[in-house]
Amino acid sequence: QVQLVESGGGLVQAGGSLRLSCAASGRTSSSYAMAWFRQAPGKEREFVSAIYWNGRWNGNTYYADSVKGRFTISRDSPKNTVYLQMNNLKPEDTAVYYCAAKFGYWDSKYLEYNYWGQGIQVTVSS
Image (tube, helix red, strand yellow):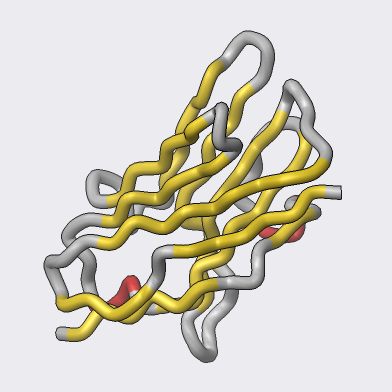
């Protein structure tokens, strides 16, 4: 089992920045992916970003087109924590953000992830 705890959400004006954190605990693996998804009211959960590592790759990163160039995902290995730095936020980024994890290669489909955080609200005002 893997436990995920998110923090760092809140209210920010358009153009501002926030950093989300996701602390993982429990079972580990040498091949592992962590991702951020988001869900706005009335919309499906959508992929935001992922980071994947194994014995050969140390942190390949992936982004949805809508956040590329504005969001950065990173990992602090000793703390077993993944971060999502969100810059130049837009009102359309408003959503509940979820941290997710899976063993093996990363995926952009939320159904492929086995472990989820509780979700954290990000609100961007115009």
